[in-house]
Amino acid sequence: MQPCSIVLIPGDGIGPEVTTATQRILAAAGTNIEWIPHQAGLAALAAGDDVMPTSTLEAIAQHGLALKGPCTTPVGKGFSSVNVQLRKRLNLYAAVRPVRSLPGVHTRYENVDLVIIRENTEGLYSGVENEVTPGVVMSMKVASESSCTRIARWAFRYATHRQRRKITVLHKANIMKLTDGLFIRCAQDIHNKEYPNIDYQELIIDAGCMRLVQDPSKFDMLLLENLYGDVVSDLCAGLIGGLGVVPGANIGDEHAVFEAVHGSAPDIAGKNIANPLALLMSAVMMLNYIADQRGDADAGAIATRIRTAYDQALADQCKTGDLGGDLGTDAFATAVIERLPA
Image 1: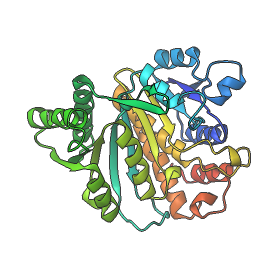
Image 2: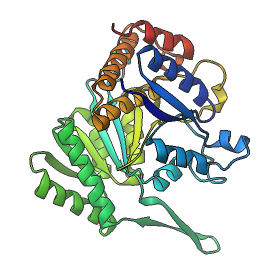
Image 3: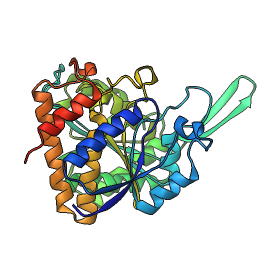
Image 4: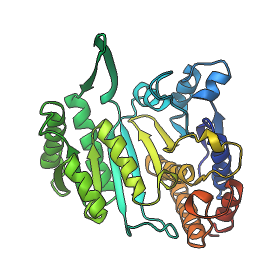
């Protein structure tokens, strides 16, 4: 693998533990990574900095890549989400979350293989809120033709590159005729003019969610605006065992941040029981991104080796407590390392 500099944001709570475990596995697999440590979230506040330090943003802008552990976001008060700030300030407009069934992780569904693509910068998450009058507040949903077209084109390009067969857009354009109406019109336009070879479907989101839990095998890729994408991606994670087994990426034209999408779980921090798999899977996504963007075939080969190793570990019932096993964070990392193909 070619030398690569990557910003490392350990995060809060269990973040440093799962980050260290992931680094161990990446090193054992033969990566050639120089880690550039930076902070965000509560860890940055504790160090006397802003929750989203300018130095962290500048480092990601310089190196182009970051691997990020979970950061705490207060509910209903306090500072704004670190993730939202990262996405908006670095223009990471495409959130990508692959969801697939894993060996040894048994749920009521089998052979789930989905990719959720979420527009990452607009919608209700634009954060345009105000108090109209005492006791009455308003939140504005923002949609622009340029951003809706951009995410649609990105999704169809991803489907072509990854040889996916179908994109389903989930929307509420029957009610929000302007915002969601714009979103589906842009997706239709990209499909008809640029990617007619990819099957295309639209579903009203409530009906789509019902069909997802009835039979997720009927879906391949999902394309959604920001808030819907946030909710539905967690719903889909529940189909295969939860957020502890799902990776995530936030990708723009120039930068990409790969992250564990679960919370910081401060109640179990420091106990060596957290599952590092979600961050490890995100790191595998990162290696595949490096292979695609930089033409580094070795990075892709290492990604495949790591994926093979954690699949085998799970099949061998090497699991942390959240998946019904008895391994700690470090022990699970060791189990994966022991199963790395030669």
